[in-house]
Image 1 (cartoon, rainbow, N blue to C red):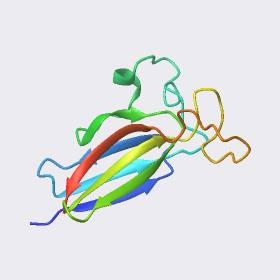
Image 2: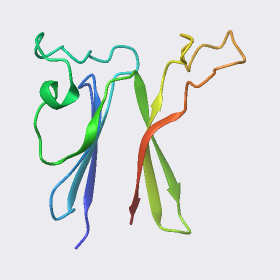
Image 3: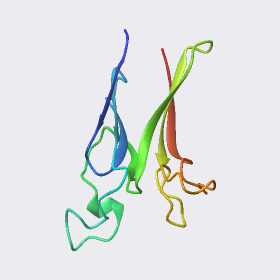
Length: 117
């Protein structure tokens, strides 16, 4: 059976999700400029284990850094790789700022997963 991969956003956090049988996957990517902080849902929590919504389908933790999603396709390997990449450099410059030739680490991969098709 074939699997389906959904791409979505506007959650103000990024994440990878998959059903137990692997037939349905989802990748959320957001936000480019305003990710929510660790305590956004509950002011009394301080760790991702206590703050994040509980979802057995999520693979790993939320990505709370400002980011964007990218899909790279390798037609020969019949594989696509979905990655979430930093939108801001560690010194504050945005990936889209054209005034600087140095983007630093903006655009670097925060997390990625390969999928076969």
